[in-house]
Image 1 (spheres, rainbow, N blue to C red):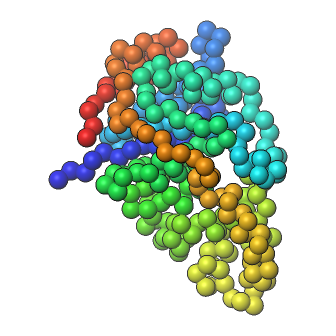
Image 2: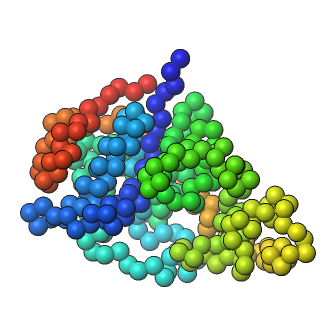
Image 3: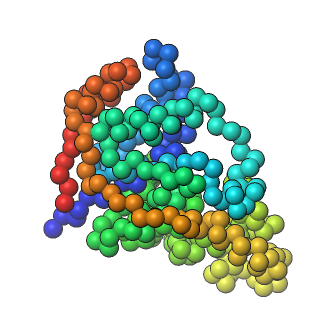
Length: 276
């Protein structure tokens, strides 16, 4: 008996950054099209790889609640270029829906990571999901019904792969990130403690006379308080109902692509399909 096709939960903000750095300079008749082209191209290839029409597109939206609770959260990151912000806004608010896609999701104050985590949390037991992202924070979501596809590495990562690599259960990744912190997110971790050292501590392989062991024990309050920042989803996010198929037709896809000069993907159709 064949298994039901999986859900694809896209970290669309990540895909937009990926497209921006790969082809952000593309334009058509004076309009920025690089991000739109890159994201749509990724959607095409990934949905075909996993043979599914069950798609959900998750976006960051507004100042994150984490930044209100933790002033240094992502405070050192440079602001998004105007061209990037405008393209992502149009993709989120207009273009994906205009093509005919359903499940274009955002929630003010939350990040795409949070939305994806909530979707995984609410996933019925007999359904499966593949999270499309390169964000290691998502490792905590891995389980029998959730896998991660990293487009950068073209790798499908499972809970079993994670256990083999890190020697802990995926849920324990929250503790690892809380101890190690995250420089790019502005989350202060325990000095001298990285992800591998944190894993050794959690598995009892870090000698209790080691300097890092003492640092972890002495800074128990710090990494416990970091839990709220690194655990997905951030509190308060509500359930988001999903449509199991989209309304993209060969005509709507071709018309949209040709309108923006994306001729190389215009003839690659995304016909809707009834999904059980």
